Figure (cartoon, rainbow, N blue to C red):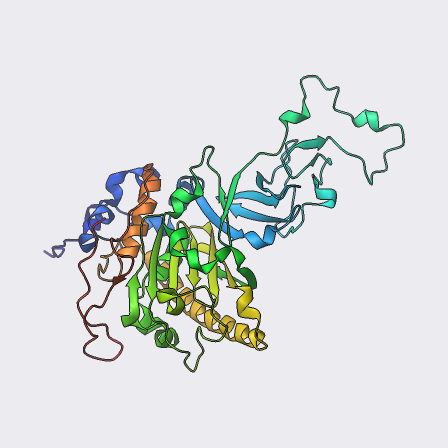
Length: 452
């Protein structure tokens, strides 16, 4: 008789896939990921492939906290707007007549018509948001102005009263303003929070504002933009961004700019994971991060480092001394993510005559690196959907940020409101000893991993 081999796999006790959706909110389901990082295993495969998990995750992760959705520069004046999607809800972000930031559900209070199209950049004439169905109209503070107003209509003169709802019984248009949504900014980023009583954005950012204080991020402006349709779960995109374990094999060009042995963990308290490259190496044949003039306010490590932060739940933030590269990841299904890649610069960096050529080079280099990443995460998605795979063991020396992120996801799924702490040191060097053995193969003895 054939018997199965003995195993220490923490996933072996799980029932056959797929799990009952109710178990996705049970702490015991992710017991292997809750262990200290040196003993831990990955999230269950259903977290990346199950439509039921995805539906719960939208409500418990994306509808309960701050989500980066765009750029403050895109709403830099009264009436300018962007329309974004968070947890399946369409949201309008604009500025009122006084320049204050405002957010609203993109829903008319009459019969729920979507008010603005996804590509809208202005709310409408005279700063009014007008429903295309029955012309109910709102101002940029969300107040209902009229039901309807009649500019541009062919209603006969003197007949406007037929449409006047001011005499309707039990109706006060003051009760029918747009449904508000919390919005805020940090640096160049724009955030939305769908919760009814959200905590301040600062609580989620933790120490990031202090870490980036010298970068003057609020002055940076978005420029080149590309969109990628990714056949993978957004968490796989994020987990790939959080670790450099894969660099020698997936990114030969990037490895010449961001050397494996020059990586540090760079994270304190906050809803994020962080690492950095110090120093950034000079460009190789395929390009790199050199070119544009670096920001004059930077000194010390900031002047020669790349900072790489995954903002929970779905945004990649890469900040170099002379530019930034942001990936806004919008989950649209368990196995599909729409990713918007944006290159940002500080005005100082664009003063030189050759700045446009340098931007072209940066855009090509980031596109190369990003396509390499997306190809590999799509291969991971294919493998993770194989029912034979039940989960894997984390490589604790290089994947502590994944462990940190995955436990943030579990916290939200089981209803725990917690902001993780960070390393005692500002930067934790991963290779205290010189690299050894063969070229391209990591050596040295990394420090013992931090327990969660």
